[in-house]
Length: 279
Image (tube, rainbow, N blue to C red; front, side, top):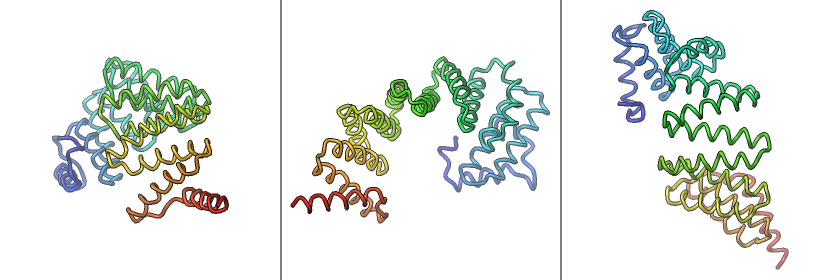
């Protein structure tokens, strides 16, 4: 059983079963403690998650299991954004033969460097993580890392490299049948093409994103794709097509009982004024 298969009620029950008063079940090992920590986060129990991580760290130290200790420290770094835990894990990772552990360490290093604005370190860490994920055939990990590398390239203004990373990410998401992820990736590719003034390329990607989003009833994805197509219609001064896309977005928000975002309302009002003025 994984956390993806647990309902919130089942997760609460499982955590309660593993807890004994103020402590935890004596039969729990470090790996179980870390798994339960992620489950606790899923049901919004951060304090219990931190307690489970601390328990996992202590269990790993007691058994002198360096790999488990490194995993526990990486989990702490990931959940609490603790740079000290990541630094403590570094030496343990360096002597480990576990490629999954090294990949996870590099990934977390990349995330923390990215959050600190240290792009060179982030790129290096993600590149190392990607190489390991490819060797391990970790498709989900590859997709996530390619996305991060693509966003770094986009921030640095290297749009060609950004497109390459995001296109590879979309290909892997297709293999994984992660259709909602594909919608986001295709919309990003559409935006990158639009920034380079490649309207035809942008439209191809936005239309592909829209087709999948509508089939999956992915409302947010549909909004992003139609907004992109509306921008492309605006670029070629096709007011009718732009109005069509924006009107359908507004209708969707109304059907869900949600307010239409201000940029969409403002643009619809501008279009109405232009059209009425033209008449």
